[in-house]
Length: 169
Image (cartoon, rainbow, N blue to C red; front, side):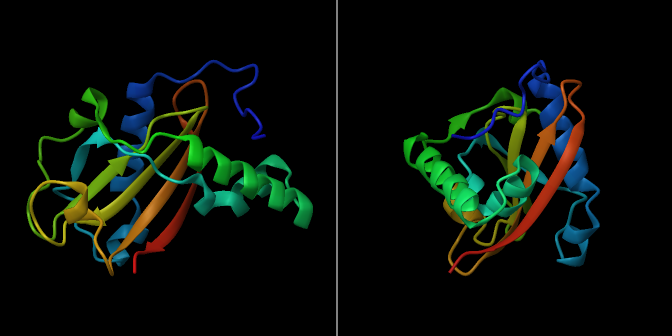
């Protein structure tokens, strides 16, 4: 099973966590170097499931799952979590209030957030290649995006941040 990184801690206020992640992303130089326009960024108004297995190496080191057998157990646990988790997006007032930009512009930068769970939050940044509403316009075949994993303290501040370049093809 996955370790509970919040044992003995209280959970951060979700508003603070989403806002801290959003501000961190807007300041990330890596996105600028990749050509993302972050001045008029949009946040998708729904919570979308994102897969933690992209960060299995980082989490393995953080949680002490080093060595082949322990890493394999962690990946198995993350994969099982992926299978049992709902993948249906749902509206979130917390993410909808972060920007007023609807993100419909072709080529516009869009941030999609996962649910805050155990002080962890995933966010994916991509461009709306097709223009228009819907995830299929943001995450399309042969697209690239940057996926972030944020780990928060009880005060809602980011304690750690990891990122991975994702290529859809």
